Amino acid sequence: MADRKYAFSWELLGDIDLGRPNLGPMTRLEVYRLMQFAFRDVIEREVGTQKTDELFYQAGKLAGCEFYKHILGNMTDFTEFVKRLQQMLKEMGIGILRIEKADLDAGSFILTVSEDLDCSGLPELDYEICVYDEGFIAGLMESYTGKAFRVKEIDCWCTGDRTCRFTAEVIKE
Image (cartoon, rainbow, N blue to C red):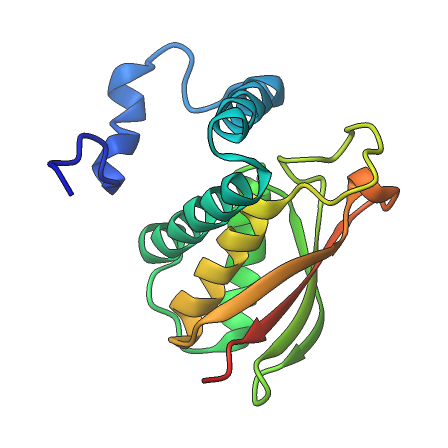
């Protein structure tokens, strides 16, 4: 592959205090969704829905791994991991996390994210849309456990539910 122009680096997030001394780190949710759904539309027109979903999942996974590394840090206690993750997701306005089922030995989890960035408040669409979130959660779980995960959204605001629910399962080799 040729030299990459946009290889991810945490430094690409920049120095918010320096760059936005008056506006700070916050923006309106509409701006985030405008960017996300504009990207999704353009990419989908170019490569199709399935490939777009794959790309959004992979982008979410990269973001989840980087979030773990730079925001949560190396953690060994599951209770502390969940507590810190809940705190940071809420503090950063990403969503409200709740663990419904956690079987650490089996590597099987069910969790919900309410008031999430991607879909809370959108009209019903008859399909789940939180593919980026699936990847984000997979990246977090993989970073914490050291094991690969497959995450699937099973309930979504856009399918009539009022919270997004995900299964997370260790990928068996």
